[in-house]
Length: 323
Image 1: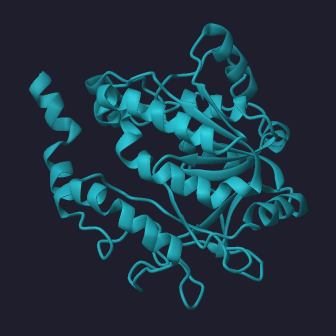
Image 2 (image 1 turned 180 degrees about the horizontal axis):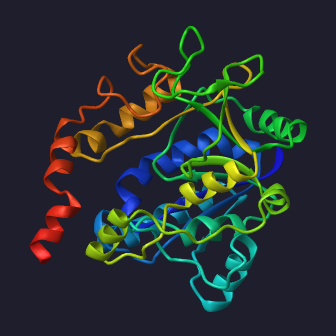
């Protein structure tokens, strides 16, 4: 067991998938960490991230309580938006006393950094609520911590993106190989969906992040949907990594390894298939068309209705209706 906090971010709108995925995530990771921190963001934004908020609030609170009852090392905290908490988080990560509540899409911003700051340990494995994990290696965190110890220019580690292929290559992403015995790749960007971060290294190597604005188009999108006009946290972190010559390493690790999958959409087919999808991921029952791919492939979930709905709900159509 490693001196690591497993920090999972939750919100009321996550309940439909989190009821299945949070227990799955804890099965895969809980025995490798000293602390499990579940953070619940009750600050409602505008746009798609606010969907299902009212009906999900009480249900996700019950889910969190059930998980804390099952895992004695688990605690939960509501994301604290008080001036005092914001000042503490802002000074730790931005050298600024305030932090935006949301990004320009209405997605979480402050909640990511609150979760890191509230973690008991310096090394934090952060998970978004919708991530799936296959392989199930119980040594992945220890191996990743050793990699961080050996490579001062690596800021974060993440599981391999997608189930491994026969040749060890990625199919949906391009990256340089990182010299490990198992498949591993080096990126100069960070995804906030899943990462193992050393907070001490962040402070030493990066210090404070800027509060950056997105493109003019995205500022307009923020205005239309009533959200703060700030870049995504992962974009701000990625730009800081590039300025300071830091890397993210995605690695499978020793057999059976650990790999991740991300569902790119939400539709009824996904919610209905989710228990089966989790079982297939945990047992490694994935088709060849999924291997090497980070997003859940159509061969595992029918995404056709989700794509159609996305096209019909473009933000610029809402701007036209406002005008």
